[in-house]
Amino acid sequence: MFLDGVDIRRYDLGWLRSRLAIVPQDTFLFSTTLEENIALGVAAAEPGAVERAARIARLDDDVQGFPDGYRTVVGERGITLSGGQRQRTAIARAVLRDAPVVLLDDCLSSVDTQTEEGILHALRAETRHRTAILVSHRVSAVRDADLIVVLEDGTIVERGTHDALLELDGRYADLHRRQQLEDELEAS
Image 1 (cartoon, helix red, strand yellow):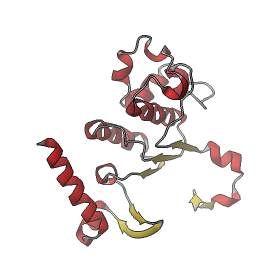
Image 2 (tube, one colour):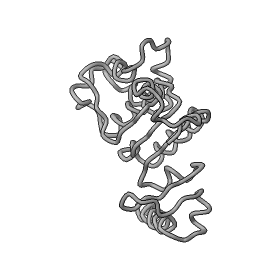
Image 3 (cartoon, rainbow, N blue to C red):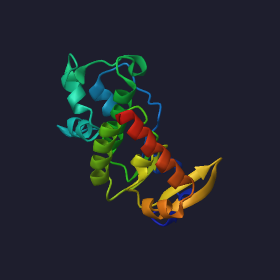
Image 4 (tube, rainbow, N blue to C red):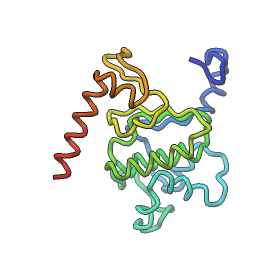
């Protein structure tokens, strides 16, 4: 694997880690304020930066309903937040870090499709000059990616753009059809 054309094994591990923003599916939050959880790992956030990151993560509307806004204590592991709110807090954290490589590991699994679309739209603009790797089981989350890699049992079985993979009519196309059917059934 390469970063800026250099084999990542040649980089100092600490330096390499500082260049990554990782959003796991299961987010860990601390028993502190929402603001401090979003700013975790950032030495000094500029005024308004936490709110901007929360807007990109579509968390800002929820924060308006919290008793103390961004100063609300979220409890150990974010117990006072829903799963989607915890995931969106972690996305805001990654946005605020402004790292050149962003890894989003199925971190939209607890949000509805409309919220997912809003987050992805904002993230596309935010990461256009960065490397973004998005892991998802939802076709809707990856359809605009430059390259989609379909894995099965840890092996690459297909790769290409959304349109190319649909034309291939393989596993990705089958997953796309099944998810469209599920969406139609859910809507009715």
